[in-house]
Length: 97
Picture (tube, rainbow, N blue to C red):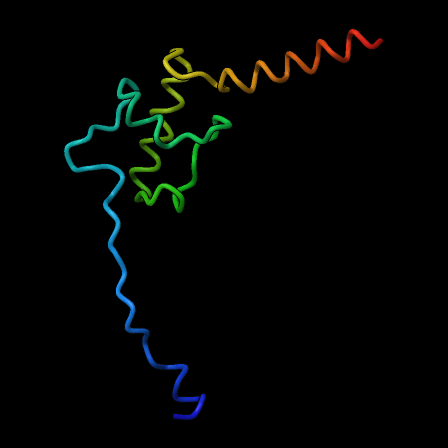
């Protein structure tokens, strides 16, 4: 078979369909910390829709819930480990001056 026809053939590889990250029974709410924390990176950033595999409506609801939980102090704005590292760096630079 020549190259021009080979490009249009579909691969026979099967793919495993991934489960949706939010089940139909899960309620997207600022009080549901176990659900919300799955959509936050280790730096404390809200993960994108492509990474989360969410619909547009679900991503909007997750973003609003995360922001509400942060304002109500249910979630930190930044993780504790990162704050500690910055404070440690600041102390070192002060001691050398």
